[in-house]
Length: 232
Image 1 (spheres, one colour):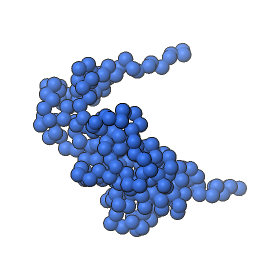
Image 2: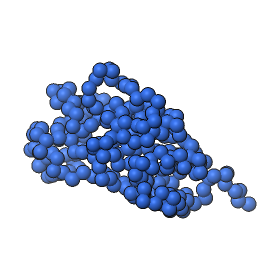
Image 3: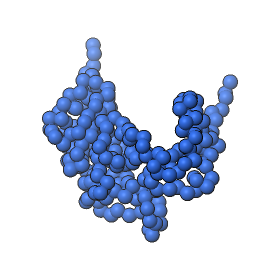
Image 4: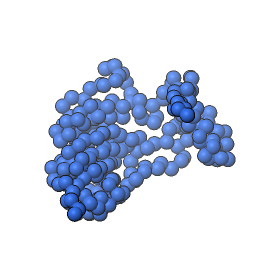
């Protein structure tokens, strides 16, 4: 005899993700820029005006009550090239990219913005039309499904509706995005610094923010890797 699954748990996650994808597209219509279903995970790029409305609907109507994280992405290619990569990253790039890496290395020390901005921006799953994107993940702990929401933010108007009234745990995530990327969240109870002094100017996670310490002394990277002990 086969037991029935617990309430809210799927016996066919792939079908459920696709069904939810169709339901979202139908519910929000033109507010959806793109969406993709992958087994138990669904990616949705939504217009920022529907950013909070979709989160509220998914929580209340579809049991996505677990807030995982919220952050932002700056998709711009760094004007400083790869000079801030760790030693191990550059080594792996050399092994993977072969002769192309030789070309990259020839311009590695050229820090003029024009030398690195020609490469097309790649914006990942569901794409993107702007340099900055919001990114958040929520989960249905019963069905084991997750949804990753993205929203494009125009450079000249970096703001979005706050999620704090929906997911209180988004409070410090939004503070971090405000501090590191310069994104404002309408309705947030108090955007203020988490890590940096109150008088600090700039947003360190933006690609065009120069991390001067990295340029003076390259990040070692490899020395921070702790080897797994050999128990044999």
